[in-house]
Length: 302
Image 1 (cartoon, rainbow, N blue to C red):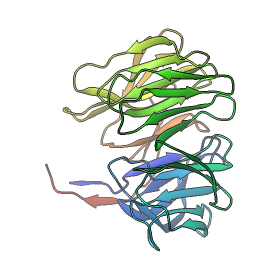
Image 2: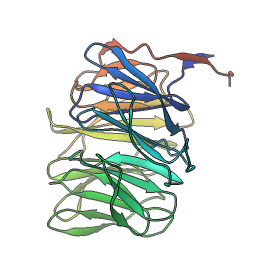
Image 3: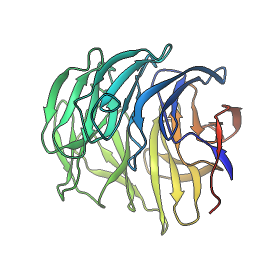
Image 4: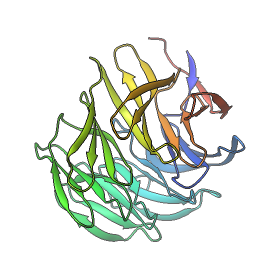
């Protein structure tokens, strides 16, 4: 079976660039407006089950990748997206599962499998802050706050803003994704519901419960129509669908299917979603508006 060699994709919040990673090491940077490859370089990136070791700065200027092991070819490293030059490399960091830029782009959260979560300077890689309990961070930006998931524990989640910190009861064993609106956060849980919570008090506004053997794997807020969009995945039937939820009451509408894709990235700057098959899909109506010529490889047929 010939299919995409890309295993992970991410985008910059205020950029038209996406970063696409192979199974390991190689990362490509693509310009969505021109559907053009602008850089390809080797990194410390190593694909893992969590699929969170690739991050792009909000302005698209830096790409951070991580590996499970520490060392010269591991740890966490930051690259210039136009040249692939190494800007900094923390070879001492180990067991990294997630890296994510803070909303202001000035720091990077590094979430390991055990040990404290670290906030690293985006400029130098130096540790600026450590959080005990090894929480995974979903960063909504300076104004909106953060959602913290304390992994491998039964502790409830925490929604923290500048004005309050509230407990969010967990519905399943893990958060798959979270997206912040100006006054709410939408939380997708593994084998569980999608919930919209009020930022001020963490009270539930609405809940979407997928049918059996389905869950929402990604979710993003679209400011243009003030709705949430996400990818609904049927893990037995292997079908991925782009879905829209009204941010006020959770009214659900299927936008389109996402064929031949195993991961996607929402791109706010171009108002699209990009699939691992290279398809660029309009969020407004599900139209195919472009194609990225992602490299292909042969896979054994199931």
